[in-house]
Image 1 (cartoon, rainbow, N blue to C red):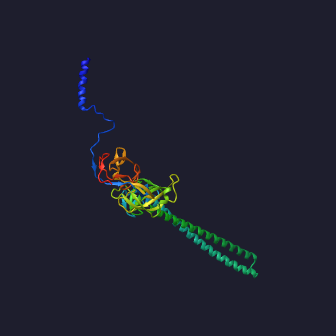
Image 2: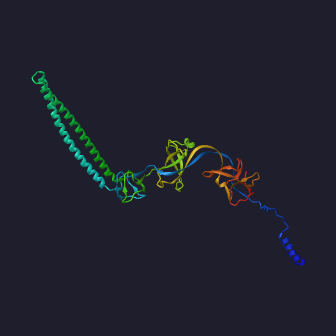
Image 3: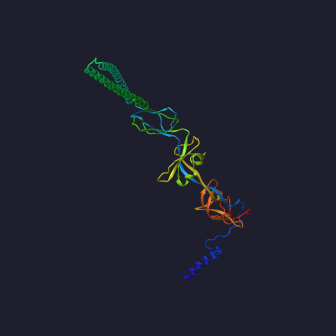
Length: 390
């Protein structure tokens, strides 16, 4: 390329740059100053306030009374009258087991009782006969004893009467023992009949109280044995929150204390006041925590297994609080707008801690006495003047 061609290209470029202001130098990282803007918004002063320290425990809503009904006898499930979610009344039939085996045992026990009764009657009759023989032998012995003393009977006759008297007494004692044994067998047979009768009643599983069925662990045709869980029932109208409290906070609660409970699932009534009902006397060896139960007021919206937060006051102290409306989030940065002595607003970073209803704890980034904007407008720029700030 010739020199004339090169100059032909450079000269037009120089002309274009002169029109575009290529000669003005712009420092990196700076922007032209914006026109001065004035806003009118409330200004507050950061102060230290006394705020109660709280420990937030995570808990679970459970029924105050929950029962797992189990089988007491062995038998085939003949009927299941409920399912999960059904509400039942006290005395309602929940599950029916096969009664045939139980009925057979009852008849066998009744037969054993009848036989024991007959044996007792025979033993009593034998005892009565032995008693009559003993009375006769004793009378004969007394008579021969007197005759022997008067030399009206020989020694042999007296000794024979004495021997019959001793034999009769021994027979009476044996008959008495037989009666006692027969009566013991009768009592055993009566207990067997009573137990068989109870077992027959145990074939029908009834609801012990008004409640709701939360689990059904048996189906029609299953074989139930003693101890087999059948259904789980929760009593109506009584719920509580169970949670673990660390040992260093256990002194902050006591039975009867009123505590605030929050159940996020209940949007219409998120805050509930509960009462401490039970504090476990011993801590768990692994977690070093105590189980605490808080009774909740009756609420038809409550369900077992709901998540709950329990707020426990554990002391109080000073902290710097700022309205949540003053908090400004820019990307991943959290800050606020500070107002300087010239009433200009400047964005400053801060670190926040716990959040309360309408305020947030400021851990760092602001000092007591600092003025700040309570509700900075959206899109507020750094350096804007605040009207009326004092």
